[in-house]
Image (tube, rainbow, N blue to C red):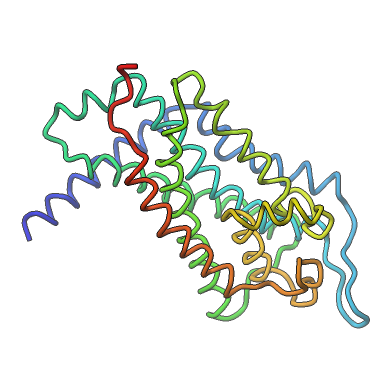
Amino acid sequence: MNGPRRFARLALLRLQVELLTFFRTPDQLFFTFLLPVLFVIVFATIFSGDITGPPGTEPVRIARYFVPGMVAAGVVSVTFANLATGIAVEQHDGLLRRLAATPLPRSVYFAGKVGLAFVTSVLIVAVILVIGVGVYGLELPAGLAKWGVFLAVVFLGAGSCSLLGIAYTRLIRSAGAAAAVVQPPYLVLQFISGVFLQYSIVPGWLQAVASVFPLKWMAQALRGVFLPEWVAAQEYDGSWQTGTALLVLLAWFAAAAVLARLAFRWDRGRG
């Protein structure tokens, strides 16, 4: 038991270091928490109005439609985007090489990073949900089944995107290029995955591209949690595809773990 206990203690200490570093960096705080909130407000203001359903159903405000997608995008931002950028900078600046010379197990470093991603995921989800419920009338799910789907989507999404962020560092060739390599594909996926636009108006071939990646499935499954059933008519095949979404996210979790193991390099600071 000494080994697991030692690992847990070191992982918690490393998580404390990661959290202190994160919350003492104003730029990271802004782009992690304030930017998604601004996106919610801006797009909810631009695309005002209602989605109307069959006779006898209450219209759904467009803002309510966007909030679940912004929850998904917030999770991807604090996991994939933040980890890929942060780890790449530490790789190329030589921090990981210096850590390798210490007694700290390498697994503890990754435990701290993934722990940071999960903590910030919980925080960003809470912030966006508070705004969605308090400002835009988002209704929290009723029943344990929908809460179970919600927790599964957030957990699998955060886990798979964290591992993808670690693997993606292989494509980043310098610390200065980190943000430029990470942000464009992430931003494009937001637009074609039903985050900023209704998924039904995205061209079919772009829907096919989006369906390859986790973000589309996270956003769709979360809409199924928070929106009435009839709104599913706006989706690709007229349903939320919750089971398919969970299977895709589980597959990405497994695949991302393999990719992270194969692609990651501890030391990239020597050219």
